[in-house]
Structures are given as C-alpha cells and as structure tokens.
Amino acid sequence: MTRKIGKLSFQLVAVAALFCSASTWAQIKVGVVVSATGPAASLGIPEKNTFSLMPREVGGKTVEYIILDDASDTTTAVKDIRKLIFDDKVDLIIGSTVTPNSLAMIDVAAESETPMISMAASSSIVEPVDARRHWIFKTPQNDAQMATAITAHMAGAGIKTVAFIGFSDAYGEGWFREFSKLADARKLKLVANERFTRGDTSVTGQVLKIMAANPDAVLIAGSGTPAALPQKVLKERGYKGQIYQTHGVANNDFLRVCGKDCEGLWLPAGPLVVADQLPVYNLVKQSSMRYKVAYEKVYGPGSVSAFGGHAWDAGLLFATAVPVALKTAQPGTKEFKKALRDALENTKNLPGAHGIFNMSKTDHNGLDQRSREMVKVVDGKWKLVGQAR
Image (cartoon, rainbow, N blue to C red; front, side, top):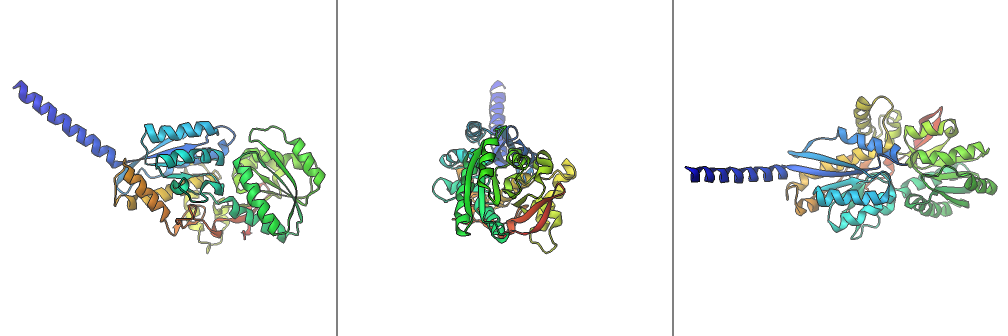
C-alpha cells in the first residue's frame, strides 16, 4: 500500500511538473524598461501608465509585463535589461525611454538574441540595420524625419541664421548631426553650437553666447521638462527671434514648466499631440484618438502624452507580431524570440497613435511623413498648423 501511494505521489508530481511547464509556455513575458524617475520622468511616467491599458492576452496566450525603472540612468538601464533577459527570461524587451539608455541596451539585446522595441527617438538606435541592430526596433519618429520638417519650416519663414543648443548626450549629438546636414542643404547658416546636461540648473553662459551670435532662430534639442530651461532663459534675456524645439518636448508637463515662455514656440510633433484637431480624412486620426480616449478615461482629461503613445505603439507592434510568431514557435524559447523578431520586421500598414508602421529589413522604424504635424504653442496649448513637410 505504501509503495502504491508513493507511485501515485510520483505520478502526481510528474503531472504537476508538466502542467507548470505548459503554463509557462502558455505565458508570454514582456520586459519593460522606463525612465519613471530622474530627469526623464515626465516622459517615462506616461509610458509606464500605458502598460496598464495593454492586453493581458494575445494570440490565446496570457501576457505578463515586468516593468523596471532605470531612473534615467544608463548603467541602471543595462542592469535592468540583463535582469529581465537572464533572470526573468522575457521573450521581448520594450524600452528604454531615452536615447542614451536605449543605445546602452542594444548590445545586451543583440548578444542574447532578444527582440527589443525602443521608445526613444534617435535614428542611431536602429540605423544602420547591422548585426547588432538586427534585433532592435523603435516607435518614435526619427530625428532625421523631424529635422527635415524644422529646416523646411525655417526656410519657408525666411530664416537665414540658426543657433543650436542641445543635450550633451547621444540625443543632442544625433540631432546636431542630422540638423546640421539638412541646414547646410537649405542654406541655413549655423552660428552657434552649445550643449547642456539633463540635470543642469543654469544655461546662462550658453545662452549669452547664442545671444552674441544674434541668430534669426534657435533650435533647442532636448526632451521632457529639462528642455524648458534654455527656452526660459532665452526669453528672460530678451531674445526676439524664433525658437524651435524637437518632438522630445511634446507633453503637457513641458508646457506647465515652461509656462508663458513657451508662447509662440514651433515644433514638429506626432499626430497624437493634436489628435482631436486633425481633419477627419487624416489616416492616423482614428488610431490616435483610440489611444487618447483609452488613456484619458483612466488618467483624466488632458493627461495624454506623446510619450505614452510611443509605448502604446510598441504594444501594438508586439500584439500584431505574436500570432504570426506562434505559428512556428512557443513562448519561452529562442525560436519564439526569433519568430517575434521576424514578424516585427514584416509588419505592414499598422495604424498606431503616431503614424502607420511599415517595417522592412532596412527600416526598423517604419514611419513616414504621416507621422508628423507642425504645431505651435498658442495660449499655452498645442495648436495644429499643418502637416510638417
């Protein structure tokens, strides 16, 4: 009798082990790295919030989102992605919020052959699509796309001379590289090139140098609330020329911090920022409004942010790729990771909050001119003034 019970117990343990294995395979794990604290918090918080709106079941499999905060720190971002991949055994990485952190995460994703969707803007995250970037995708518009819109607007406004002030990191450097090339092509003369850090409390020295150069316009290449600092100091020092910012400031926290000093500011932004102002024939209006309505239902009127939209679009890409990947492999395997990567690369005509995604072997961003609108700050609000060319 004792032996029979022992045999039955062994059988039950074996069945339980099989059940646990099946349960594990039935679940897809998504690792998320966001900058929910630190200088980039105004970008990372709406991204983190957005994951509460994402589906918990895709393709018949349950989905677990494991979210870590890198505190806007590059070293922490690398630690986070290592934990998610090697300890938590995730199938996909979404993150991080900012360019330096995303760039630092690329090697870990590539070496472990884990697909990663960044929520940061720099084109250097996905270009060129080499052996390292084979596994990397991103949802925000490229800096090159937005720099094209800014230089076109400047040229159309009769601007001849421009000063540049940007972050002293990969975001600022990427913007200067793309902007300076396009400015030269449009006969815009760069008369100053200054830098500041995300944590700076003063940019007076840089602004005084810009004022001395007397440019027709200034481009501030920063993101989130730290980008308000040069804008405010320029206004306080009496600068009368035109000020432009990048799409890295397209959220209401930036408007709150910048206040009256942002009045008249120009920038290219994703359609989500002005979704309710888009004409009915705009092909992105419906998909932008879908996210806007869902987010504001939970977090309140006016709470939607361009950066949460980048997280939403990453979720859409993931959800679209999963059913395709499941045809050849199961979650928790290296084959599933590869299948997910291949499905992401073959995404076509997917409408998101910021545009319509068409990925390819040479384009791991997949957005075109439908992903940008020219906006202006009028009476403290974002105002649509036309599609950015």
